[in-house]
Image 1 (spheres, rainbow, N blue to C red):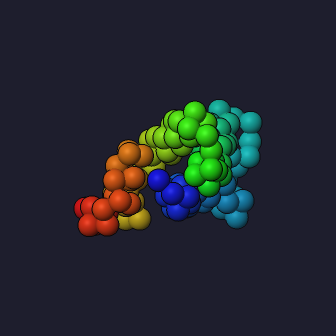
Image 2 (image 1 turned 90 degrees about the vertical axis):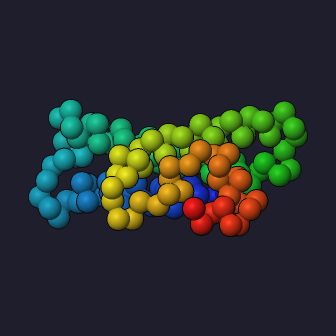
Length: 118
């Protein structure tokens, strides 16, 4: 798993959410205090928080083995959060197969370039 996976999935989700928060549309969705707006803000915050774990990936290489396991678990958990959110738009033209894969499947795809094609 690398940082680029997190950047791609976050960009995909943000591209779906950003129009909802566009003040230019005249919509108050996302800005008001109604339940829909609160849910949208919570979703956006969850995406940003899950994506922030990508900063741990760089530290993994030099971490002690016990810390490396914790980093792996954290990265996998946060990838699963983002994966679950992204799959809500599975029928979108910009959705890529990578967003359906588990963290360990992405690691396998990185180790065997031919596997990343499917």
